[in-house]
Amino acid sequence: MVANLKLGLTEEEVRPQQAPLVPGDSWRTPRLGVCDGFQGSSLNGVNVEGATHKQVVDLIRAGEKELILTVLSVPPHEADNLDPSDDSLGQSFYDYTEKQAVPISVPTYKHVEQNGEKFVVYNVYMAGRQLCSKRYREFAILHQNLKREFANFTFPRLPGKWPFSLSEQQLDARRRGLEEYLEKVCSIRVIGESDIMQEFLSESDENYNGVSDVELRVALPDGTAVTVRVKKNSTTDQVYQAIAAKVGMDSMTVNYFALFEVINHSFVRKLAPNEFPHKLYVQNYTSAVPGTCLTIRKWLFTTEEEILLNDNDLAVTYFFHQAVDDVKKGYIKAEEKSYQLQKLYEQRKMVMYLNMLRTCEGYNEIIFPHCACDSRRKGHVITAISITHFKLHACTEEGQLENQVIAFEWDEMQRWDTDEEGMAFCFEYARGEKKPRWVKIFTPYFNYMHECFERVFCELKWRKENIFQTARSQQRDVAT
Image 1 (cartoon, rainbow, N blue to C red):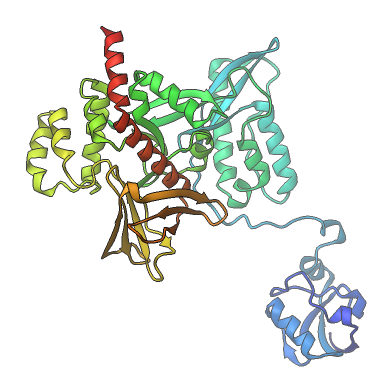
Image 2 (cartoon, one colour):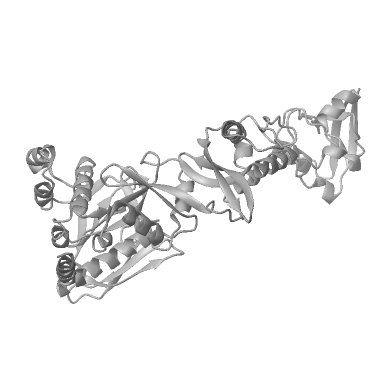
């Protein structure tokens, strides 16, 4: 049956409805006198089957105070399909078709004893990084919470409960079952990214004996990696000290390396002392370094101080391997000496290799990704920091280098600071008799840039006061 209804509308009824109208939707508009079993067909003579929500709203508004609605009657069973019952109006409807590849795993389990209770926790990893450790009952609670929220999704079975103690073989079978469960449910994007799942993947509030510890895998300059076990809330300094102890750095050498985050293949960022490496570790599910986004790198600008570490095998090894990698990536310009350097590399003459490379452009220089700068109306700048100068290379907004380069001497710097709100690094410089001028560099790495400034001036002070050589001599005296 087809019926034309001529309706007078109030201001409230002319307002757009909140729910979107999609093809096949029925219009449940009791206030307009249209009840269940009827489906809207046209508005004011315009066919609206398949129309968007906005198109329908525009037609309603265009009719001002009068609306001619053509409706079709439909069988009861079709009406039920078109309109959910009142009982289901409170439920949410999700799209389960969007999939995602999630490198989640449960590779190990651990026996724990706490307050006289013995139980097993299963270690959950994402892309090789430990996220959390959970008891079986926590998996069971997760399963029930997910089923309650995503009621119309068919979940995979969770490994069953067992009233008796499990053998190691049975525990491993349960581990595999839990891993398979997480893989399947997390592959559905709407479930994997839900608050329920994200809360589960964070560490438990329960402080299990040893479970609050996490393992961090950190890349070393020589291409190897080291795994350290630290508290989940350990700061950068605490994690770095654990790494330094594990690789055998002495109290002097530890001052010339630091913990960095791999941003991409061409840039790494030094972590601030009060950051939480584990948080970065689990956020970076994909990174430039296979298996980890954390790496140890040299944190030193002064080559003279570096040379004084030539008798330290570990420091020289790390300097050498990082230098080789920097040459490959083009950070250090060594074209004219590439043949000699290659020979020294093949012969593993590390000290000679480093001595030759230190004369090349780019050695011990940190280059930041291109970004905007208030001294340029058009284009970006590429910032380069070394012990000799601070450079701004002009470039396009895409990062293509241009001819203009401004180099600042360190004694020209007056003040420097960060603008947290504007995400910028600011510095004031003065040249000759000219009035001092402020420059603002808009970079997400403004804190790292500020730390580089602080480090350079610290090393310049060390050089002036000969602090490094004095400390190194004292260390040798103690050793002998």
